[in-house]
Length: 115
Length: 112
Image (tube, rainbow over all chains, first blue to last red; front, side, top):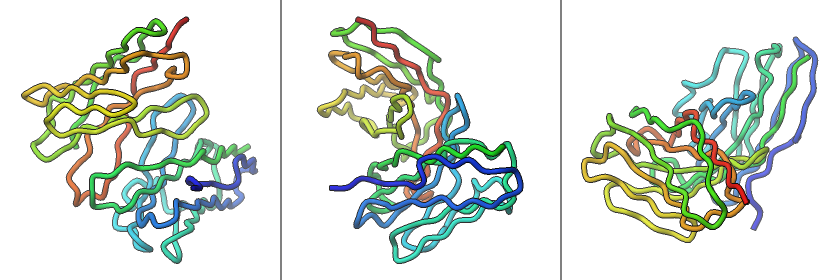
């Protein structure tokens, strides 16, 4: 079966522009997670969804970052007025549900470069 | 959340066992230990997890000390494809929603 997919795989944008990053989780997975990984660093948690609700947005770096999920499926991470420090790989993961000890399956990531 | 401490890097000979240590001295009773790895330019991949008993699957074995303050991930017969960054993570209670906190990990280089 298909794994987690993300698009685009690479995105280059100019400082100040808005970007949208998309994640398609594994079918039937009710939990979805967004992480950010700066060059040479570990992953930073951004936000997770259980269904279409986001109980924990604590990792979003600023109000320029937002995310939504619809139909308990696809999720979009939006970064407004991008800054150079937003350059990173943005990783999405999904799991069967958020409140059980199950594994997260990760997508390949979207590499964002802000010039 | 309990923090973890791992050596930043280690080398391993192909075909030999790789033993990756992790210290999690502040772990609490209901927190699980998870291991993931990240091969260059890919998303992380789940390896194994455990609470207090030793665990084994097709990829690795996880040995957790009796006091749960440390654990060791064992790759029984390392191959070149096992070269990756290995992350030891203490997963908080279920109520926290399976949020994973990744530290620096151990960069493992398997050499021929």
